[in-house]
Length: 103
Image (cartoon, rainbow, N blue to C red):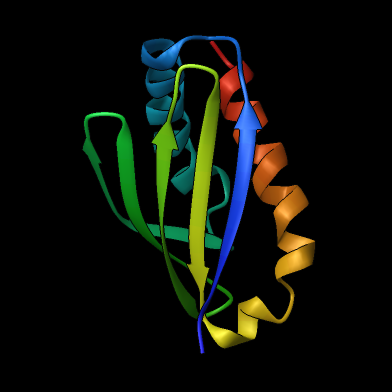
């Protein structure tokens, strides 16, 4: 059974700048996490990103909604990764903050 994990990350960038930084960050993520994380699909529609990724041989999907003052990340994890979901939340939050901070 899959389990959604939701993380909200506040920002003060404004929607357009946050989208720009997240787009750049997702492009870097594939090469940065090479063997650990593979982002197989990503599609932006306005301020929403939908994506598919795999980690540890498991497939996950998610969406990111960018608002004026926050970013809402929802990742649906397969049962194996869902078992360690509480340990993944800080990593998701940390990487999101890093993407938003990089200019």
